[in-house]
Length: 272
Ligand SMILES: [Zn+2]
Ligand SMILES: [Zn+2]
Image (cartoon, rainbow, N blue to C red; front, side, top):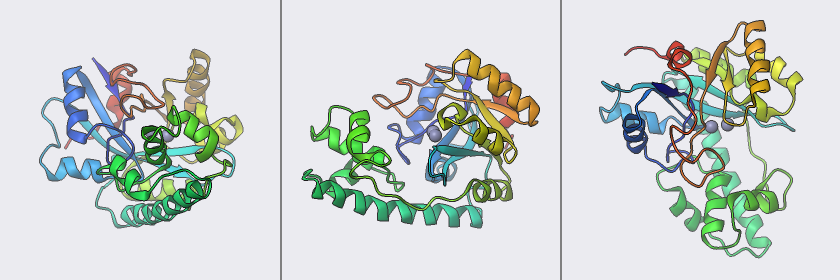
């Protein structure tokens, strides 16, 4: 058997609904599956409130992935086993959602100023059930209209940090995120340290979190060794996952294409 502790649904910027994600995970025989949407627990709330969690066969772990404030690096913190109805967690999510909406409007205006023919409604159509509107949705809408050939090109030319249509938004700090996750009963994990691009910063964050995502599709064997030794040094749980977003994303294309051993995943599972 195999497991995956890092996946996204269409409640953030993934392409599968939570139900489709569960069905796929069961069809390919995953044992543990964590759902870690960006800045929202709407997907896991949906499963819980519709009687789809807990599941008899698939062991589901509720999660969330936050982006932390950092001027130079992409720092993502995943929270596992959070209380999805926790007040402080909801407050943080609401602040981020609001900031995402404001930024969304700004980016669309920037694009229009640069003569791109794009309207908010077109992006919202692409975003579907997601209230956590992000640049990936805008990129997808632009690709759909033929303005760019790929999501990557849209980021490289317009939407990436420092590019012409980029607009900043509010981000909570690593400390704030870790606090909220722990206060709501969860464990905080530094996601994909290899994408942070600064090992000193990675070590600083290791002092604050409970776990580190050692196994990740873009981590080479040497990276895995390095992060395993950091996990040992900072006494952190070892995590991992595919960061599955759906077909045609910047990540793995299929669930099951990248998995981790069940023994790694089971430490994060809380029986309900
Ligand atoms: Zn991430
Ligand atoms: Zn992710």
